[in-house]
Each structure stands twice: as structure tokens, then as C-alpha cells.
Image 1: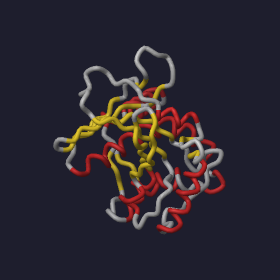
Image 2: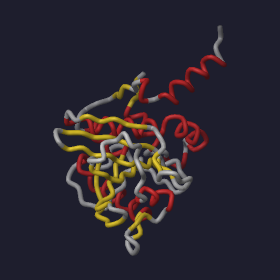
Image 3: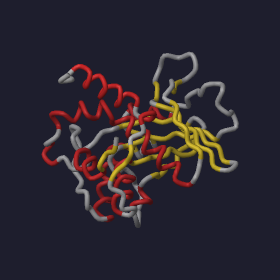
Length: 233
């Protein structure tokens, strides 16, 4: 199955007057996190690196506390990185979401992203203002079979453009980082799904994205069950 980049961006980024809000929660719940994780994997794999996503418990050992969405392993030559990842699919259909046009120029996109960032970051405490995001900075314990020599990184996936830097092109706003010093992390990394899709669309001239079944188990199993229940035969 394929998905159209324009259609995705129109739905998630440019829902004027919340025109899609009546069914956005259903669609986001069905495919939002899987699509976000897949696009991060797709982005990190662009330089011929090895990237694996693990949708297994991302939490502190032996505790029932806060939990993140997944682990992402990255390897390029001798570099090995293990990301602990939290996914937030807040978009223009969300309560405080604002639309951004598909063809917004760099200046407009940068201004939009910086406004979104200001809502997310507490400059006084030097942490995320929302605890649902700030939990990303808790150092989680990976399964013992992960290579202990991996560099550990914290990463948040936001759907909308979200960063506080100046950029000259779309690529510079896809994966950004904020310097911190907490729980052994020197930085927190921010991946914007929207910025990546915009770059694919505008600069790489890509119209469609394949959705591999192995990367979208919930989506395909749900679609299969719907067809089973509502089949005409």
C-alpha cells in the first residue's frame, strides 16, 4: 500500500478550521505513531546506515513508572547509537493546533516552528514544559541484549515543524537538537515528521511513500479486520 504525501500533509498540517477534527482522532490512533516511527527509520537510513526499531517496553528496569514509545538502533561504520523515543502526533486538528500551508516558504515555516517550540520548551527550567514530553529525558534501561557500548540519546518525534533555530532549507529542520545536561544526556534530539515529508515532496520530488506491512502491524491488522467484518461476500 502507498500513501500520498500531499494528502498526509493536508490532513495533518493544514486542517483549516479543524475541518478534519471529527475523525482525526481515529486516523491518528490508527496510523499516527507507526507512520512517525517509520519515517524516522526511513530518514536515518538515507546514508546507508543500519536502522532498527524496537516496539518493546522503553522504561526503567523493574519500575511501573513512565514509559516511552520505542527504541531505535542506529549504526553507521563504527558509530552505534541507541535512541529512546517518545512520539507526539499533535497536529493541526489538535485542540491548540494551528494550520500551516503545504507551500509555506522557509521564513514562514521557521516562524511557525519557533512558535510551536516556545509552547513546548521551558527556557527557565531548561526542559519540556509538558510532562508527557519531558519524560523523554528520564534515562530508560534498555534490554540487556542491546550493545552496552552504544551511545545513548533521547529523541522526541513531533508531527508539526518544531525547532528554535534558523534554517536555510527544509532539511535543516528535520532533525534538530537542544543542548541539555540531565540524566547523562548532553542533548535532546527533535525529529519533525512534517519537515521530512515537506523535504521529500518539495526537494526530492517524491509523491508517494510505500507502507511496508512489517512496519505497520496495527494499521494492516485493523484494515484486515474491518474488511473481514464488513465484507460484501
